[in-house]
View 1 (spheres, rainbow, N blue to C red):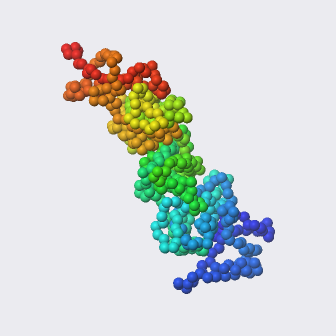
View 2: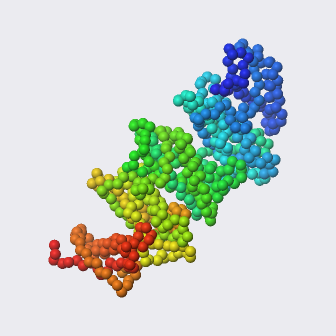
View 3: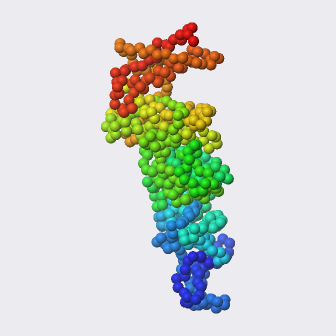
Length: 591
């Protein structure tokens, strides 16, 4: 193979042309015979012939044939040819089985194997005597990653084995705006790599290697999981704008993209380039679940072409940690890998139709307004309650803790209320306003010594499209949101929203007891009378309607009488209880 875009080290005349060529000879041995000195003997003969100018006259036009020692790859940089700011990464995976009593450590074995893989790639990616290639360099960097906590599919007794993900960087000519890897080149390379592993060709790259077995992507199972689950999951949220060809199917693109994003995070969370356990050695599994959500009614910040479609997507990866292990840097490491992949356009080719994938920093909520999306005059309020237990010696005041927690709750609500790739949503905005209310004079159901605890009622405002007279929150959406909120509190997910939070516990409505009382009674009651007209469906039971309505009215007054959004006692700090008693009375004979 003539290697394109690589100049010769010298020329006898400026008028001559010169190319660097990678050659291959095949030596067939008797069956069952191990390789001896055949490789060295072959190379010695070829080198001797070139050094003695024996090949200079075998074809009219040859001026000189000069032997070049292998490897072509610069072992210090891991690169052959030139580097540029325009590159493509090719990923692969393999099982590496090696001697337990190896004379080299695993990092040395990996180094030799990576260089051998890189050498095999050079003629495929840069070797083309009949066409013009855009490839100017091939590198074994970044280093291959050993995936921790994952067993090989097979190995013999007395051997060690690791699962490895590898990445090859292919540098392209950045002076050519149309430069590319070349159609079918990645598939050709991976096919050749699989073949070289299956026929044992790479086993000779280090004397301690027993076998190198190709592993097909994706590494994940049909549920998007690599490794194993645990009872200690960490949910990592991120967001991105996905610009795509309007003639392509969005759900197919999303599926391919989620898989690629997940594959990107696996080696950084579970991999080690040295063969030793890395900083993320507590990670036992990585999953693309739950599915990414397209956020309806929110335009992208930009589009490369007006003919493309573009959506804002909130994505989630789940990182499973060993049980009992505290979260370390796993969230930041995951987000850094995803952002880097999107910034470097690594995901633009994972599915036919993708034009661009742009990382969007969280939170999506505007922290000044507490709102994501748009506001309108048509809205629905969703109420909830929780106990907030936090450090007595907190480094933040309660209002700051509440602010962080409210925004985290709002972020979790966005994909539920606005995320739907298959249906039209009427929701155009979600807000954490009005501010959550701390209920005074009410003790939590539990708390540990040394901590403070408050009971809080929260309200989320959901803005609807007022141009559509039929716009609504959507059937079952409020229940879905409250169920998800309860789950996020029970699994401790929201505890990380502020370092001073000990626990957030969901409290079911109604807050009142069976007699309609919240808080406590006293010998100093104030009776507040009010009146209203109640128009209702004549086919429904009035007493049932009244009971539900009285409860809702009572719940509405609790936070304004006993609540404070700052965490300090408010103007109503003398109120110790609120009750819906006595029962509301229907006035007869009055239209």
